[in-house]
Amino acid sequence: MAARIGALLARLMFARYLLASIAALACDFATFLILDHGGAAPMIAALGGYLVGLIVHWVISVRFVFDLAGGPTHVQRIGFVVSAAIGMGITMALVGALSAVGVAPAFAKLLSVPVSFLSVYAIRKYGLFGKA
Image 1 (cartoon, rainbow, N blue to C red):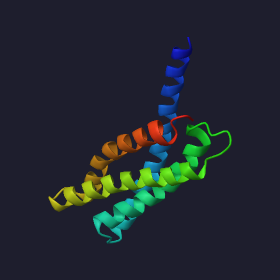
Image 2: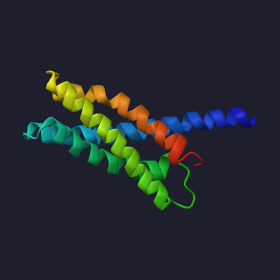
Image 3: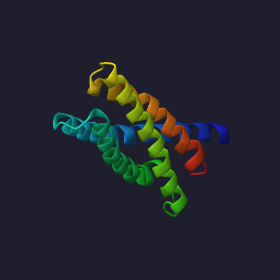
Image 4: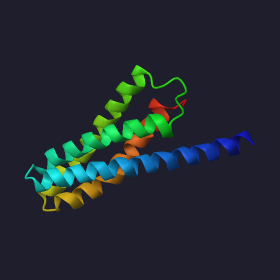
């Protein structure tokens, strides 16, 4: 019985994380498009969008996704930023590489999303908030 409840809670956590990621991605992509259309280099636009999305994701994650009864610790804050830096690196590398070979920057950004999302989720779920 406890295993079934644990499995259900894990699915709900993933669903909440997915919704938080969609909200953050919307802010990220809107910022990316604004910067891209404003003439920023694709990698810089990807960086700006990712930073805005990071802030949105942090706020939603600590309030609605992970059970942090006492609030986030400094280690979790730092870990969140480090995991985001890994995701940002993945995003910037993919956007830069795909743009360099002729893929439209917005499409390159879309292609980077699942790779970055799954990598960062695994880091946060199993490492950073593993006991939350």
